[in-house]
Image 1 (cartoon, rainbow, N blue to C red):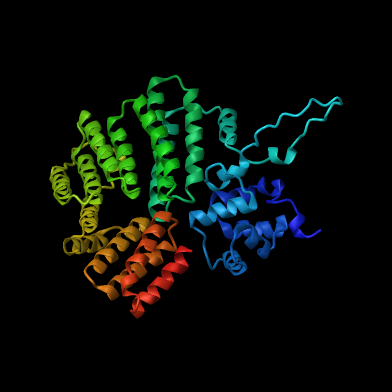
Image 2: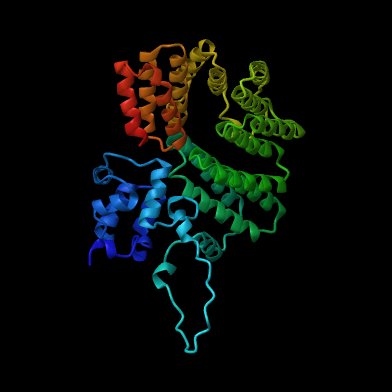
Length: 437
């Protein structure tokens, strides 16, 4: 029998192996393809056909010369190899849904019940619940500190590497926390668990937002809002609404973005929002107005952000999740908002200064900010400098798994079209095509 007659998809026994589960959770496609070849009977050309890739690209992935971060390609791999969506941090795939039952005549003879022992071994969303029940976790201050420390580690890893590989772990932690929340009666512990679950849901939404899976992101942001509403955490509600506002700007919905961030400001004020929080929210409002090309409102929101920031005091009780918003972040976000308005002369030095002063560990942030610097340089017709700058963003894009970064680079390629005769432009366009495939 040729391979065309073979059952489609990797064997269930392989998908259930711990090594494959780990590789999928990390989106280590080099290892996934190696296991598919050595234990699943999928040689590179078969993987290529199933996933709509070229054999040479599959070979480069296996050898470690190329990484796969593009969400469309990841979805093709999941569908081509029949890897369940949750194993790769994706939504449930269409082929995972059971078919609509068909009415058939009742047979006269007794039909043996079909069993699926191999599929039963596959890891599923119920696994975390089972482990939580078996562990019988008793909530203590130590457990709460451990969970909070995990969240802070997720923040760091998200900044450094993007959320693609991180998402399965965050989703698993969210399930775990919601399960132990059901079995916890102490009101103080329940409040803390609600807050932790709300942040895990928000962070899950953020990773989907970074993956440009906006509908799924919105559903997790909504779950986060409900959890925060249970404990009336007004500042955190403002934080989630600000995330939704930023997503709306990416979806070219400036009116929604402005409405969401103003609701966030109202929520924060009800709890006496700290100056740092209000400054962050004002900058998010500026993004919305800049998307709408409203110059006056953008400058007003920027002015409010700087006004609030100057009122920051060491005595402020800032939530941990807003402490990232320092002067460097205020500066670069101001530059980005001005760049969106087309005021490149004002924007370029702000973004450049922030890149010089900012931390080198936040690789995704640096990739975004480098793109915006290149964009403002191009707006000022500094074509060769813009190409050199976007080259730095391309270097970062090969390290960080962020479809949002990739989308910005593809946008930049289109912006270069009027300058296609320049050698520097042709070279960087080729690089962008290689990185964003």
